[in-house]
Length: 112
Image (cartoon, rainbow, N blue to C red; front, side, top):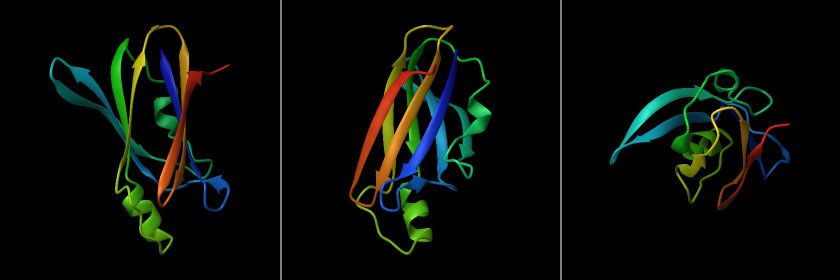
């Protein structure tokens, strides 16, 4: 199972490049870091697309404070955390997050 992550900038209507991202997996009552990266020019964290990941509960953490500060803006959400469950070890998943200084929207689905 792999995961494709894409961050989009809802202010300018483009990909959000340079967003620091961290992926964690639930292990018992704790969270274990799986990987970290930064979105590329297309808003993707490409390193995660080909990694095998087990079924389970995960969370994606995006450093939005850093991203919007680079654009000269302040944000209500210094981090955006998206918690999700991967049900099938053989399905490629896709998470898309549209970011704005005072809101965000997420999509989770199977990559086709």
